[in-house]
Image (tube, rainbow, N blue to C red; front, side):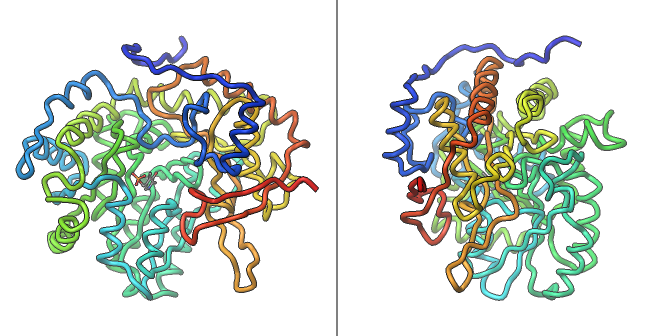
Length: 458
Ligand SMILES: *Cc1c(COP(=O)(O)O)cnc(C)c1O
């Protein structure tokens, strides 16, 4: 078979600015060892996130010019609504300015103290919105999902036995929703199988709890189902996507992921009464229901992107590019999550830097080392992002200490990815020289965005 090539040509380019390792050392210091505080002009390859960083297609840019900016009843909204209805099969579609706005509205309506939301793994903004409402989030990832280096086809699955047990423990009446994150972003971009979605759906039906999908990467998840799950090889992506949504009562979506848009999101559902409540809040915080915090042109870009993302040539290239980087790192002995996820390569920082104790944030130390070595920006997904303190102020660590190299959609070429592999491998060779970090300043929620740290050099 020939090389799987980028299924696009480049029409417009953005320059990359180069700096030296010495300059990057001082950039890091000024940014308090937090990659979120680095100016993006100081970054050579930006793998901080795949969110809102996609390259739009010429069709999407053409759609931008077709955007109708009417306050109410814009045709751009109706095109958007029809597309989302077609994909999800859900009648009530609420546009929001991004995924977390959909989450905020949803959890403000149905969350609150004494409530529990169960998931395979809640994404950080989802968990934060749940907790902000006063409710509690519970992650029940399957056993395979807890072992980064052991390959399994569907490491994003929920532990269905634990789900039933937890529902009985907490009481179905205290659980307004079960949420499956597809693919499981915080758990390594690992997919959820159709069988697992069906099994969770069955439990939800049994206890009469609605099932929602955090559908940010629905197309990548569908591709994994086609590739890895028995009975799906001959189905088209739209068919798989249709089935996947058929088990859900609603979904939240960030259009900054699998819609190739730079901004946007939506909430979709079957329940008219819940949609009515959500719309009331939408009008106060986002905007009128036919634009919901977006411009008409954004709605156009999203509806075109949602169709493009289901093209098989694209999905094959997308997943291959992640696998390609994973293979290179595995061959050099770098501890990475296996198999590769849908949107990112995850380094296992616990194994990469075993000499750094968890309360000195090995993942964060690794993100800093990658930046200093090659100007690569990545993000820690571990105890800095998800750690909590006990009543004595001692860190309660996260399950995994990962560093995510998120690959923006349609942005970097194979030589960029080769460069990334070289830098990671160079850092791996020098890993003994990397120091842990201590926190100087932090916010009470989503602290990783703004936290300030310093290296521990004693
Ligand atoms: C990005 C993301 C969100 C939040 O979406 P934003 O558009 O960033 O607000 C929620 N869930 C998952 C799984 C995500 O990846």
